[in-house]
Image (tube, rainbow, N blue to C red):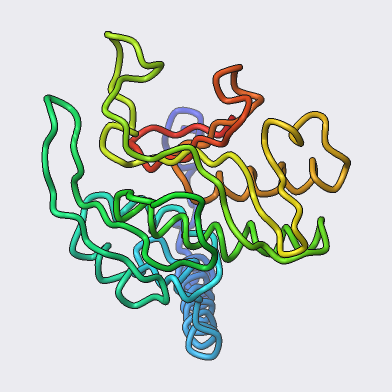
Length: 254
């Protein structure tokens, strides 16, 4: 019988694999993997990953913005005590606001009032704790540096149109509740500089000089790394004069 019929030819030697062949196939790759793991662990000990790059690390507002900062901020929405602890460990000064409901979908929950931040605002800022954390990072790490880089002057203040407003999206009688209904949003309209200039969305987004337009676009892009939703003049006419920033459940950068 030949091999095509499944039988060995008479006198054929049995197939015996050499021990070295098994070693090469199974053991050497495992040794290589072990070496790679050992090298990786050594590098981590020598150069630990900064906390702002670790998704499940604790947010530290004294650190720069990292790969995981947006995710860390989003996690604060589900843990009010952790959020308050994050604010307490920062230079941001806040006043807790007692939680209260104002209708079926409105109210102040886990909210704070900014007492002192990197720059003053044009009106009191009462927002949720995660919003306060995101605003603080945006001011310090995005808006301030962009103002100096593009406009040659330090940031002196931020103008806003409001935070809390008990209404639905678009202000109509139907539709999804706005994030403003729980103070989980802010509408930012302009920025004041130390040299006396005022940069506004209404006047400078489309018609401003190149430095002003570049400044506004950079801080919009930076906001998208921190807030859950960022809407501006490119979104629709209702946002022609402000950035809407919120920390809701949805994600959008327009």
